[in-house]
Image (cartoon, rainbow, N blue to C red; front, side):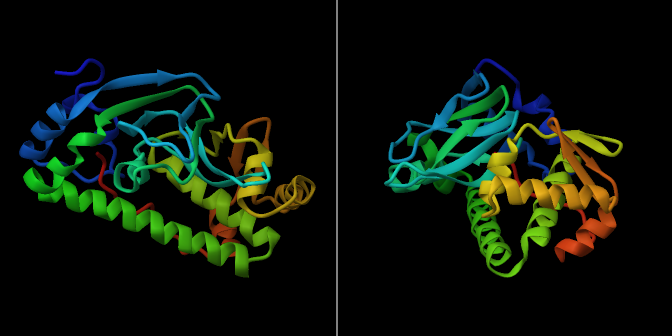
Length: 244
């Protein structure tokens, strides 16, 4: 049995956000997991262009995914939350197409890349979950492209804040109307295709309108319904998802 959190007492499995595992699936995951690793803020988890013998599930902490362009510019593409599965690109394609960095101290469950095929041969339900995760990432990428192409700056920021808030809320990381949000405003602006100045201007407008406020690493949700309407998002909870 690997050291660290036992899968039977995983705090994430207790959340309604994640689908339940059968007894057989749970037993498999207990022996499939190889251990845990703790990382400091700013640590690189996976590097663009490199392979990795290890795959991860985020047990705690937040991170960013980014792509480094040939001229040295860095583009944030999205954010990492507890329950996310990391390294699937390296596991299937042989190398990462983006970099994953810890935005806070993080704890990651580890799995051997060499054993991924066991999911397909021994646990087809778990293999389906892995496929679902990949499909959801593709769907989110498509939604992001639509946001960058069709939503204006205010709508983009509203969309991002609502998406982030709903995920944090589903993870039990919100306290009343506020949540710690460690992502730099520069990273948020970058992910939305905005300059830092423009992003700060939009955040100021949302604050004055009484919709949301982001300052000193704290996100305050003033009017979730109105902000969701501005973003063009239906008023619904986060979709339940599998966890590996």
